Length: 487
Image 1 (tube, one colour):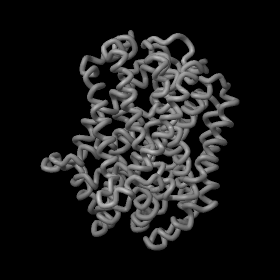
Image 2: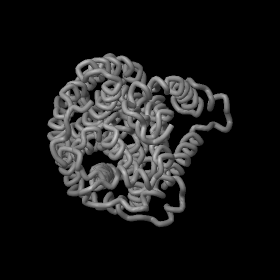
Image 3: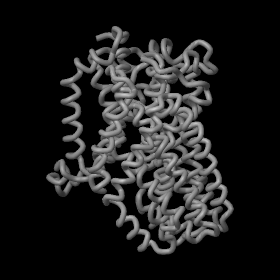
Image 4: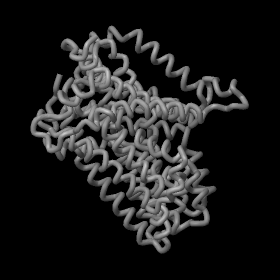
């Protein structure tokens, strides 16, 4: 069931970049780089771009174009009907993230408006904290969550051509804003210390496993690789689209935004508040963005204007990523037989209602971010596992290397699939281990906590049992033609 295709390579790339570039590029990357050695962090970060992100993007591009279905139908059609539940896991995980990601977009929209109206406290961390706490978890946060879902649904309801038209405006605008902010940060007196920190590696840091895990995690969470979002968009690829080159361009384009955001934030911190840099960087995503960023701009000449630019960039990044998540959920319902016109209201209403707990409770929001953020790593594993079971060389020959491609993917990609599986296992075990409280195993295993092992295992088990029970139904409803990958 096709709705047409992207109009050009440029249209494909900007839509895919809109999917990949999100708030994680702007608020998470600078913090991770700062907490893991600056320049030292960049080395494994680039390595894992080539050993996690690009290989998985190649899989998603290939699957979406070959199957012309979302994750459930693609897994069932290409890898066998018995693996429809794996595609359902991919789709469910990305949709579960959509439920609270619209809350994040609502936050950015609220702060964009407040920065325009000069309502954000810029001279007192205490006042900024009070402003944040007076908004998050309130009916006002619910209102902005609803506005965010409405904006996302409004774009997706117009089909792939409407998505392309919208993102053609959003993504170039985002790049310009981030570039302007980075250039402004570099020109601040004392910004050189931030540049030196970000781009000077300390080789001894590379002996620490935590730096490598942080770099792999950042690639897993901010490129969109393994989420199923690129697969959903790949349904609309033109027949002769060069997916191999596009995967590299997408990965490096996404990480370019992250790097510019790192320059923007770290140069500003080192120039404006060097004495408080540890406090600022250690404040977490919400604290860095909504409490300390206004303080930084408050001490910068013309800071009020640049703060508007910052929150506009953050809003665009959130919006373009939310559009992709809504499109994935819509694509799944369309694969099940619904028209876009009927699927969109279901996705929009479900997204608003199931996002309410995260809008009203920051602990609940953090719980869902923890559970399904780690769940994304399992999604990446399933993509690689499916390719390995299909036959890596066979998959590469049939679906990755297409006639007319600008570049040909060699046998290095064959062993990268096995490596992705190993990376996924290591990353999952590492993150679950971080949530173990050795002095209180009862607290570690309780399902009612924002951050522990029990809450992950219980929620994963419920979803997996349901998906396995529904596998036969999902495969029959969404696979369409006979499978190509075996039983």
